[in-house]
Image (cartoon, rainbow, N blue to C red; front, side, top):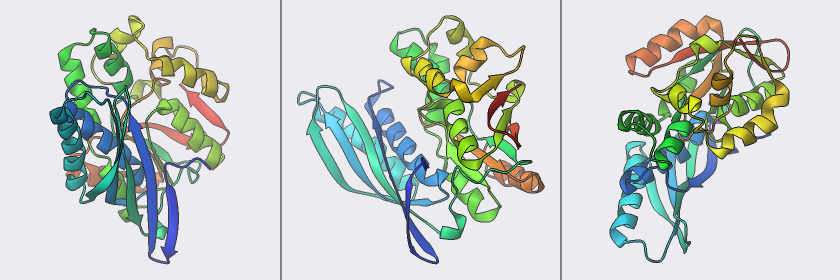
Length: 298
């Protein structure tokens, strides 16, 4: 099953979580790039309900990349791991004409609190912890077409940790959870629906987006991954009449360091909202789990 990370049970009270992620630069500032890459890599641990303990750098840098640039990337990553309560214990670097950076991350979790994509149940409420649109905004930035205000909002979103998901899972009954990254909201949702044997219904009017995304959509500034996601996942997706084509394409668009999609019982919804509000964590109710299969967008 394609969960966000591997989990190895040590005993009744302890399991190890292991994951890895890296990518090419999506912002110009090297420190910010390193920080986003670390937050993105650690997110898989949080999506499984765990806490970060250890990270190893994965670095591919051109031989002529200035040492100060490399140092800034590594520092950005290390600072975010430190904020998470973990340590960076080394890594591996190779020469590569195109820079790439990320981390192999280890976490720990109580086996009773592991969250997967497979537990969503009919009647569950669907929550999302970050607005969508990072992918199209960073693509617009690469083409020198992004408003700096919009790009700054996207960067702020990517730098936001998903640690809150693990804290929530340790306190309340969470049936399923995943983070929204390269396969976009629809791709990761299709996986949750398939592995849980249910249908996820999204209310299109409730889906949150970063400022500016509809303008970039109208200008067709989508990354290549949007169409690849649509080609692969569209057989499992039904779209009701009246839902805009731009909105559908936006939720097929890859995200970097996106939020958590959480399926939880309606009985604990109010408690979850209060918990998140107390920690200044935004959250949106975007739909419901129901009998059936695939995705329904209304």
